[in-house]
Length: 216
Image (cartoon, rainbow, N blue to C red; front, side, top):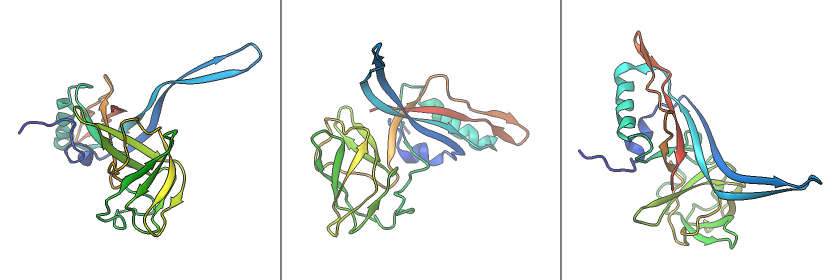
């Protein structure tokens, strides 16, 4: 069966038994200053999400399967979707049962693109600082905005809520776009030279891991 890239969550992210992760971001800031201690900062490009992923010891056969899928990505050439293991669901809905089959969409985007309004949430649904979300947008190629909720808010009785986000909403993301809050995933690739298939000894393979970087 032919591989289809970017690899869906079920194809790789779901089979990764992640033991440790450092989920952060790479910023592209430039800082300058003057002799009287004034400073200026400029953002040269949008920040990108990163993750340092460590896998636990596993049976050789299981770890070989994971390594085979990762090698098929051909380094940074092909992308896959990775779920932040710390943010599989909103904090207020740890197994996604409250969200259920809700169809959540963007109702509005702030003029500075630092905040969004959502509709379609369950009544009085809470979003917490640090919750994550995913919006797929554009085509040829398809692109993904993976965002973080920056403030704790509660939807009104009509399932509507407004809150600030990180990073800034991309210009091509528009009102009415669907928002994924259950197992939101970031699209990206494995940084060159960071994949370690692990060392096989006795019954287990140990020390496997990689560094992930977002690709929009």
